Image 1: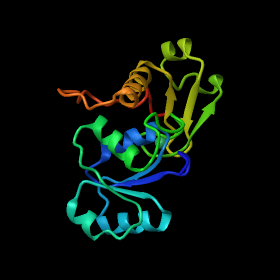
Image 2: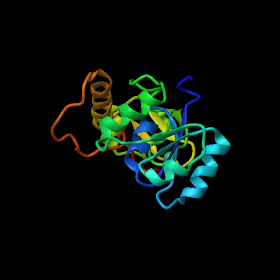
Image 3: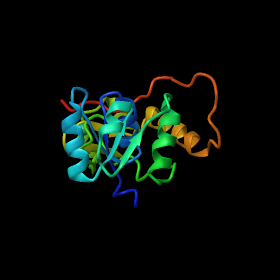
Length: 178
Ligand SMILES: [Zn+2]
């Protein structure tokens, strides 16, 4: 399955994982308050991989694509999901999905964001993207560099590392449009 075709539907316990799958470029449905039945229906209807930490839900789900996420740490969860779905660990086309709402990101003219991003950001960045669904603006800030570095670490790690690596997962340096 191509990275572009792989889509996910994550249960309410997997919000952080869902956000990172979006950063990796995967269309990932997530609703914090969503109920299991509508999640199942959506996964079934749209051919999404159902991602769940709930053994009961996994047992009764009849969807053809199901991954019961057993890992607890984010990096391990990403590895687990991508491996079980047969996808490359480096992910798909990064930064094509809004981590907040799963909308598509589109390149936007630099001049169009003047006044909508902090002046120092405007002065020091050339490439901006906008979420076509929620309007948030993204740029290649330090947050993004850290995220990409972490993703590369994930892809490069042959084995799970021990110890704490639960630092804050930040979205790319985004600001809501006014
Ligand atoms: Zn968005």
